[in-house]
Amino acid sequence: MTAGRERPSDTRFGGLSTPCSELVTGRRASCVWGLGYIGWSTVEALRAEDIRVLGYDVSTERVAALRHSEGPGLKVTDGREQALTDDIAVHFVCVPTERQAEPYSDALLDVFTSICRATAARPRSGTPPLVIIESTLTPGTVEQLLLPVAVDAGLVLGRDLLLALAPRRDWFLAEGYGLRDLDRVYGGVNDASATAAYEVLSLMCNTLHRARGHLEAELVKCVENSYRHLEITLANQLTLGYPHVDMVEVLRLAGTKWNIGTYHPSFGTGGYCIPLSSRYLLRGAAHPEELSLLSQAVETDTRMRSLVAESVADGPVVILGLAYKGGIKVATLSPTIRIAEELTRLGVPFSVHDPMYTDEEIEALLGAGTAAPDLATAIRGAATVLIVPDHPEFRGEPFLGLLTEERKSPLLILDNHGVLADHPSWPERVTYRRAGNPLWLDTPTANAPAEKDLV
Image (cartoon, rainbow, N blue to C red; front, side, top):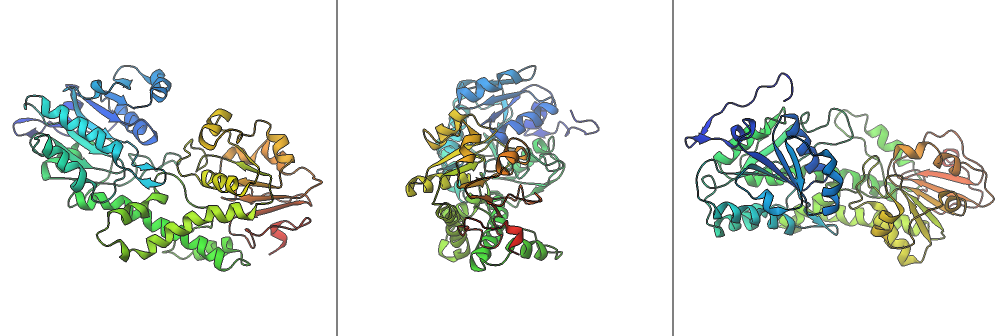
């Protein structure tokens, strides 16, 4: 248990212990469904509070990789029956709600249906189990999909089962932006569910904000990420509208105003949250035609990958990075995937290297022959190098040495996040451009100067 924190009191629910008190006294355990970054961080937060945890994932490979973490109070499994016993007081659902760049609810529905049926099959006694959904939901999911499942199973919410939403908004790589540190929004389908969720979440989070109900709680995560999606898309539209202007510099200066964030043009967004946020809102809206800004954001975001691929169509191309973000091994909706698809369509030879992925993993995601087993040979023979995520390794060797070698043929470096923007000088035949620099999507001439000499 975290030092200095008091546990919630052993209050009573209908004369019985609450799900929280069942956890903190060790009488019953918690179950985390889905052991990706979100799910595993929930596991670790529960373990820090001495809560017994069962981690479940459908991937036998992922479970096998996590077996070394087992010990007192933690077990991981791919056996669903173990996650559905009456020993579980709280279920945390952290399964993916995206597939092929679109909202996807089948995995969530499958897990929730299993929990409801197992709960209905047991005699009604003791504390009702609490389900906390940490995944991002398409607005309308609870009303249209989950509540009917509970009713069909013969369950009365608030009496037989408690259901709450608490989507995650923490960031794994930055100090001070973790599960405990950031404000968190939660909401229940009724007062009993919200109260029970507050007690449990208070074990892991310092600041909680209760939504009026599940409809509001369902929308918050999508709305806050759509704000960022629109702002990032505007940055990309500005660089397309003013191609001869250093839009990185313009946006940096605009960001000095106290109420404006700093954004920069890019190859497009990636990951589980921002690229899907507008799609979730469009999918769940009663009047999607009124959300024209979101529709345009989706279109521009998707188009950026094609523009990048078309700008380097002379090939060959080396793509540095498969992950969507530096320092994290997640390729979900990575710009690299769509750029690779476009290069394949255009018939441009390319290869991919990422220090966090094996060649076999890269080829499993992008196809045979896409990995760059000999990085030095690939870069020396390339016409273009695309740096996609801001992996810290790209600032060191062997990458920097290979990119700054004297060359007989020209090389264009397009840097999505400006990983090497501060490098002082480039060889004569190497053109460096950060996304958003002047003419960054134009093909350079054979002896083009470095981008810093153009402005």
